[in-house]
Length: 372
Image (cartoon, rainbow, N blue to C red; front, side, top):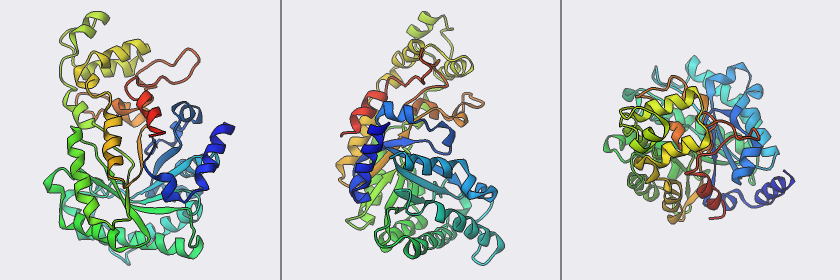
């Protein structure tokens, strides 16, 4: 642990943008309870990302688990990314001056004193275009987020100073490979990023069915930012490809080796592993014997190369651990996020020493990518 603290302190002595250049870290989304320093040390990770749903701060910002976890990670020497999530999946954005709008400002004002100057990166927005109804993905969305960003910028200027450790990004944009998602609103989003000197850049979430589609994200965002601006990638995966294969038959070699029905579908094998975790060899065999997975086991390295080759990646974070939301009510239509995870503690039995088992496909590349 002393080695980690020293390493983290050394990184934090650098300007945040320089320390972040091209880094790969661990993404936990909302699952602050899954942060394990032992597992982070095993994987050699130096960056941690969490998000907080802003309405949950009504219960007390300082006591929220995500806030406490991200601050504790910083105290342990890790670089940190904290994302502010505004879920509006059931209603339009509130108008300025309304009571609901004022509640959002109160929530933000309660959080900023806790994290400003302490986290390395603060991301204004999680997935604005996915956490809203399609009919509300218009310029009202931009107006709302621009006010929230202005509030953050003003607080940082007033309370953190010119050398404030916390860098600001806007995010995140999804499925930019689909033409329907390139809209006047996304154009305004990038125009705001470009025109606002306090914003370091934009966040993207390339969850795609094939790696080639992630290039569309880069082709869209990079020309629309200032040359010195960077991008972050707090989530990325081939989850669309995994999902396309859930309802296909399990590999015959696996079925024969482990006595599964030959007509069993892949989702049924995953569900069985969630109900009674497999020995590591059995779970590894399931994935290794599946050409749709084994043929993409170096996706993490290939995708990071694409990001880094731009010369403008600040930091990316990859799904680190199978969380509860990934495994609940698993079925043929469930998004199989759990196949992305570096650690597979819900589908694999614990190691003999009690530690969490890792997914064979990701761990070696994850470690190698720490040093580029």
